[in-house]
Picture 1 (cartoon, rainbow, N blue to C red):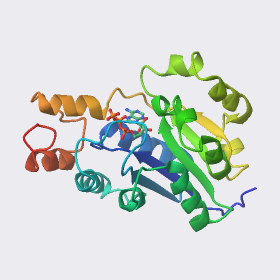
Picture 2: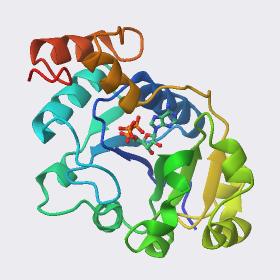
Picture 3: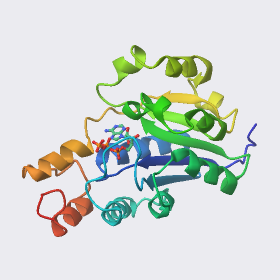
Length: 223
Ligand code: ATP
């Protein structure tokens, strides 16, 4: 049971190839709802369950860093970039638990598309011994979330889902909370495709990220 003054830690992992307003808006809304002590953005080094990122780790970190620089609640954590081999969230979570202690409430944030694949993650059940899973919906996935999903995920939802932040805060880990947030049909895939075909991505990503992409000729096929 956490204490009243236990730290409330948010962790937002992703490829961020590139970071976009879908990510940033979800983080801002969840930060408003939860009031995290700290919210860490953790770019994945070598993701196991998706294609190799298009641009280098350094570029992804530089864009993420520029995008969150003006928000004092958002922090960049580079451990998965620095760590050798494939990136496993459970390894990161073990480290966070060690660093913040057994009384910290740790919340791992993911979109509903990623949540639907959770049972394929390395040591996915152990994650519930380390953190809560916070799910932000993504357009097109809510009906899947409600209907067709792996049996093990259905069972996890039956036993672990909570529907309020008060219930979530009764434990430092172990719950699933699907939080209503603003649906935004923004994806890094569409942004990369738009840049490659010279379509505008203005208002989908922060201007500083757009400038960085232009300066370094990323995603255009000319880098
Ligand atoms: P790609 O299109 O390359 O797969 P992406 O846009 O999904 O990329 P990621 O960096 O892979 O971006 O996503 C990191 C996390 O953010 C994931 O948990 C993902 O579900 C979530 N996410 C990304 N975009 C949105 C969005 N528009 N709304 C809600 N969650 C999102």
